[in-house]
Image (tube, rainbow, N blue to C red):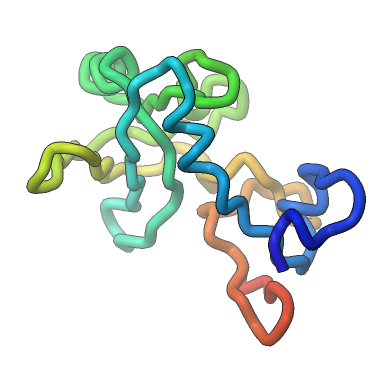
Length: 145
């Protein structure tokens, strides 16, 4: 099921906390139409190598990341710097920044200061470790963490 199949307003609660499959196949089109030139950033835990987040960075965000040592992105929806952990306290401390072969994406290897990296919290109110906490199972999503 995608967003067009779903009747009614798609809320963050439905996207983040339920088992409906509502993949945003329009995300890259939206990013491409944004006035802010960005590259994708894969964020990976430096110890476990688990993928935590996929975000975007522009030159300003990359510069801030390198200078501060804190993973920083460019919010493609708010059009501003997104300094990970600034409001939640769940900072991602930089270990290493890698660049892919075509220099059109980045890999941030990080160590978490808090207990998680996702902005979504679980049922107990705990920050989720990473953003990939569900898997597709049959016709829905199954929580794995």
